[in-house]
Image (tube, helix red, strand yellow):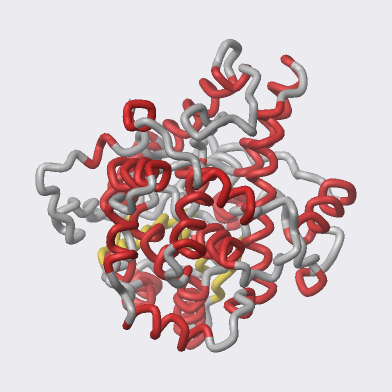
Amino acid sequence: MKNKKILVWFRNDLRLHDNEMLVEAIAKSDSILPVYFFDPRYFENTKFGTAKTGIFRARFLRESVAALRTVFQKMGGDILLVHGKPEDHIKELVEQFDIAEVYHHREVGPEETLISGHVEDLLWTLKINLRHFIGHTLYNKEDLPFPIKDIPDVFAQFKKKTERDAIVKSCFDSPQSIVFVEHDSWGVIPSLDELGFSLNGNDPDASYAEGGEEAGLEHLRLLLSEGSDIYLKTNHKSSIDKPGFASRLSAWLALGCLSPRKVYWQVKEAESKFGSNSNFNQIILGLLWRDYYRFMFKKHGVTFFQEENLEQAILTALELKGTGLEDWKSGNTGNAVVDKYMFDLNATGFIPHAGRLLVATFLVHILRVHWSCGAAYFEEKLVDYAPASNWGNWASVAGVSKDVKSKNGFDLNKQIKILEVVLPDDSLFA
């Protein structure tokens, strides 16, 4: 085919480094058309009365898309920004630019999978192939020591067999040059107002850190630089006012500004220079948990949740919404530990994993509110929200995940004991 053009549909993969989809598209085409859709479904309200995307993640997303656009512009091109659903615009784009193929990264969440299905069905009528890539995990599924259907449901077994029998592949290099499809109008990034947010005096820039690939790589570099806090000895059984180390890499990983493999190999390089470190181990463990939940959703879908009549349980929970849930959301439960973390979540869009376990424990096992209400609230508030990890972790806290016997994850008795600690207000908000 003369002048073969490939449309590269960016989703949660907003980077150049270790991006097999992009590398393959460049190699197999004469020119590419990068596209990002600001899908209105991700800025709507849910049946839980929460927003699909809160202001902190919206800000981080806008910055990440803008950063990718800047990189493409420096390379002589751009990324087409479309305000609308992919299935409503993909046919027009394919026909307008004479596209031969469409490339995208496959997601595992049911809503994201459904969107891919709509686009694939539409492209099929045009005899255009939608090619799927998987670039969100540390391990490629074809490199696992078992097929997806046989992946162990218990995390400890998954971790042991994967670390023993699978390999982490090297990263794909960032492309040095790209030939872009010519276009005169590349679209604009919608403002927070246009996405439906009212700032009301709040500063969303104070939430986490700057979005985008360059910012993520710089954070990773500083994190692993000699003399950083990662090399301090930590006591992972420390009290709540002296929490263990947190890498804060998760937002860049969630939007694909950082590749899990990039993080892994950079950590391994630091380990070879400075020796083993418990904080290094925690970062790698976090990457494995991300993989585990993604593969669980790939294997099971929503049947990962081991709860009879889940839909009815959710409907009942929505009918019974009361002051307990609202006090939890606003950080007015009266429990100093919980309120401290919920204050931080509402003010910044981020709390460490230990804090997430604690507030989830309180909501589910102390207030007796259905876990899905908490998961939906985290979906709105977290700057680093990732569907599989968020809903998977909440299911684990509630005891309705496939991995109900794992000792590597949630320990209810331990969390309850920590919740019994009441600290002076000064130590909580210092």
